[in-house]
Image 1: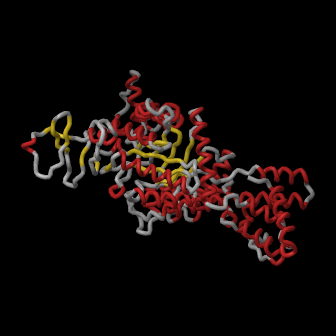
Image 2: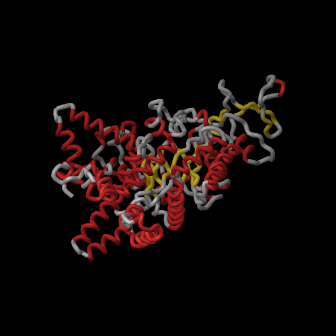
Image 3: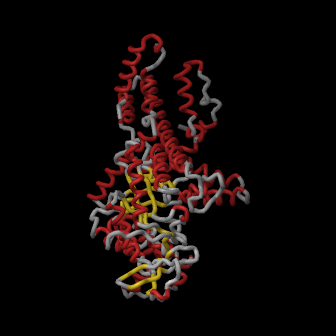
Length: 533
């Protein structure tokens, strides 16, 4: 990224080139506007953020404590506020990403209204949300930079060269709010070609990492619901290839593919693949099918049969035509899915699990690492898990294993508020607090995300506000529960006009029209000035 003085010099050269018609163009103002808009296209963003993720992956390989995190966002404003908060409280957005959840797109962004996570929403809404998120993040850059340039102008007007130099250094070293998005492409929204076409749109909007799952596209289910149907490895690998070709065509050579397996919770497949060589991926997939041995005389006309170890087997098939896997094959299928995905172009894995258990995740990942030593996971810290109950059960079981007295607890009722202040509850909460660090160290998890957090926070905060506002608290519910907290915490959004861009607009008007500018920020009339600053 160029620095401010170099940008000024470039505009001065352009002024000299184009002559008197550019007489009113200020090099300082033009350079300022360039600095406030670092990224010109979504592809600029995708290339920049892909390089960040590649660096972060290398950092994690060297030190497992350097894992990355994200929160799922369903609107650009939510993503913007998350990154502003990161910079405010931690001084950086380093190793903090954004997750774009297909579940939330379906539930909150479809023109059909709320939908389940079954790929029924408009696929164009996914790249549209990516573009929206980056529009809001770029606006956060513009706002923070605009504040710096206002301060620089004030320092220069006061002749305070030391302060001006300090602010200029802040401008030149500015850290953008633009961070990687891991974007959910579901099962590809169709065949390989459909996957490729949608991937290009998502990359063009700014996505540097695409997450694809091995479910059947037209039978896709939420990862934490029943009825999931997986595809043979060859079908999934073809879609991984489609994503890679899309990245390469769009010039994002470092683009990241996250291959998700739903096999841990899936017991159905839509088709039996063709095996051409004994032991190939197709034959391994077939070997997991639930079958019964039969005599040829018992075979029915037009029935699908499998020859296994010289004997005929009938695969178990539902009325829907779907074939069933054996109940004891889930983990083996997960491991094979992971190994085959990494061997065929995926960069990261996603294993959808039933519970957040470090030991169970580590068991699967360590089996993958026997073949792919640097295998890394993206893990869904899902709101579909009852974290309190799961970890209280884990703490209870650990106490039993350690020979501790658990007579004060009923394992079947550990969610009860009666246990909230107990030793067991405190131990469970500590396990929850350290889950990400523990699992990154022990189970190869590079990236931790929560898919639907802002769906739940929006519901909870609105619920609490409505409960108070329409009840006895009246206006105090908003003032005490929202505005006063914003003021005390220094949340920029308390000055909502400035957050939405009024200060930027005022400064642009002054740049464009000079003294004729009609600005919104007049000190005597702008109520936002009641909040100081």
